[in-house]
Length: 141
Image 1 (cartoon, rainbow, N blue to C red):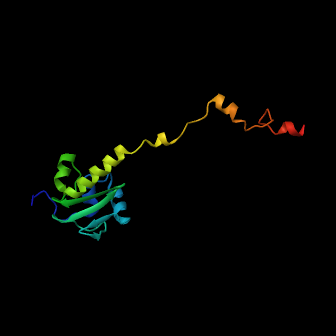
Image 2 (cartoon, rainbow, N blue to C red):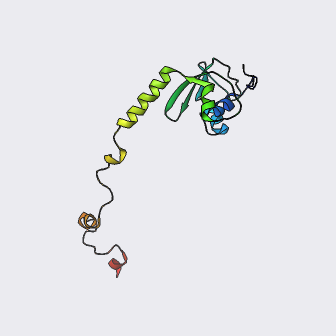
């Protein structure tokens, strides 16, 4: 073990230090919502991960599985953070397959047949019937 590595670190702090979540509060929220497991068991924010533990968590729609390779309570640069874990091959394949599905999915805007009607389209809609004005005051006068 590196002398600079802490012997004990909270799970929410480790997830933040490994740069999976932008803030420690977001990592704690994900843990509280039951989106994080350690070795298949639901975890609490105060749980202390150990080297060799398998952590599975959901980030948005992605399910990621990583093996802890190092401990750190300090958020450092991305290359240093990547040394704290190793993503499992199944997790990488699942993430790439999801990205490919998103890439091949049709553009949501194309499902709309047309956008806002033009002035000419509005004239031909004929929603007004015999009325020439949108005002209802003319009928009573």
